[in-house]
Length: 226
Image (cartoon, rainbow, N blue to C red):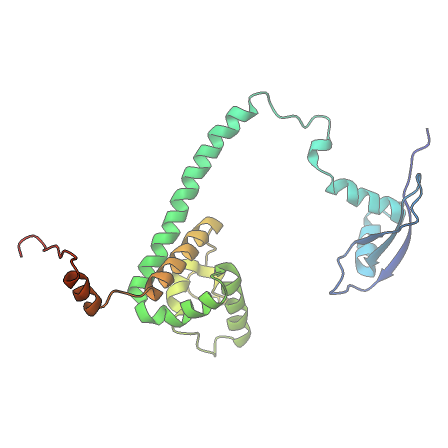
């Protein structure tokens, strides 16, 4: 039985910001035996690949790339052991325990920083609230802005306290803490900042409302020793 091969027209052109390196566009005139595709490949990428195997034609090179993207489960030997379910259950429990500790660590770190920095963080939290408390996206946008401004531009006053907790997530410079927090830590940190912001925005009962509550039949509980 003859092996089926895909035939395509190949156009090479320089890299484009609006296209991926390998952009395959299916055509509606496909037949039952041959899949016709238009494949756009940057010249430099095609030259690098051809240099590794000058004997192969473009169709073969594209097929090899697609085969490498196929799931490993397609291989005949890729079979999970019979006790995989039990092993996964134990591993999942351990991972959840570690993730919970990391999340709580991030949560506590955020509240500790808010308590220490106080009003210094207010403008930063206000800006973060406008971004829907997407801490990753917000931090990366500020990181790019500070990196473009350079060391000569003074960062906002709220920046320094956050750098101590979030490291390279917000710090584009080669000075100060240099580390990348875990995703779980950042999630806990983000949740704490949101909770702190919402708690601060929540109206507190005024002395007048408290007095009216007592006058209306509410009971005031005295502290022990008073």
